[in-house]
Image 1 (cartoon, rainbow, N blue to C red):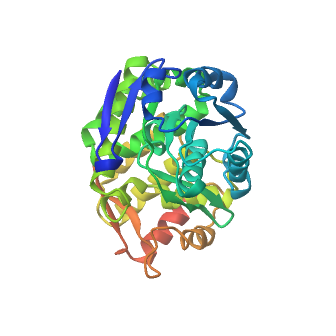
Image 2 (image 1 turned 90 degrees about the vertical axis):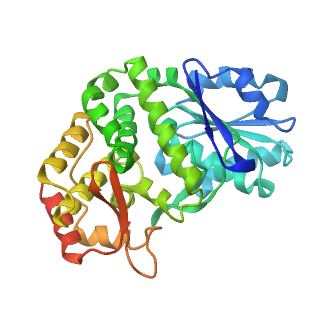
Length: 360
């Protein structure tokens, strides 16, 4: 097992990475502050891991909250099911919530923890690759709105993150590829050496080589932790973690939540960002080809879906969280391993990128 530390002063917490960690009471219970625990999971994850997780918290009379599975359920209405369970069981503000599942469960449980009685502790136990390398670390929580993804939420840090690499054995292939989008992102924005390593090892990741997966998760979490430590509330460098997300969120919202997985939309979004960076003269053709090739080898899309017209993209991106003073800001690439956030680009470059992506 490897242990990383996300250093945020009094809000610092450990990230445990290793095999067979779900059910390890010695890792989880030290981060429980009260006498009650509520475990939030979904209908897909519960049959695999809820029993072990409940056993680890047996001393705290755990409450199980099982939600429907899918991005389309990441709503305020479904969030209320968590509050209903907490209130019916008379949970006080020292109750610890446990997020057992992927990014949707982690985001919703974290938001419930941030807002129930104005804040209760929570622990992340991510069971998908995407959640393990990205959404479980850093304290972003929230739910979707029909007009925009993750538009309602809060920054709220967990007490600990338990990354059980063995849980990836039950992850569908499509979900594994979706998680690889976020892994590739770290190489693109700040770790060119890691990007080159991924080019050499992507096939082993797809076949779930245990050691290769563990290394990719650890390096991704280390990158994420360093960025969050430098900029917890996304006032600067943390925005670079959104490479591909402005395009990707538009795709998710435009198609309907759940039609494309988050990682699939981000994969296409990163390809669009690379194309636009080339049009601005920042990336070489060879760099764009490398990026597209790695995304395709990871079984991720590199083009926008047909229903996403340039006009639809622009309409949805206008409500992106990175819009400031009416100006759209995008995360683009100066090179592999070097990302920037900018609103200094001609509208024609963005329009050409959107039209080329759909035509392809």
